[in-house]
Length: 60
Image (cartoon, rainbow, N blue to C red):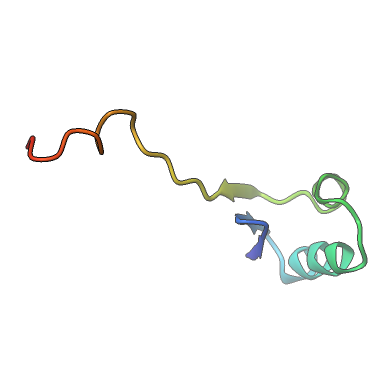
């Protein structure tokens, strides 16, 4: 697994993960690296707050 820019990229082999990371370090774009090394899963870290929930304190 490789973490870059708040996302996690999962690979089937260590070689794929290493190649992906090396290409990023060499200045290649994330899209270019994804096309070349083909991660098996991409998890995007996101923080989402539902509208209105924080504005209603005391309601359970």
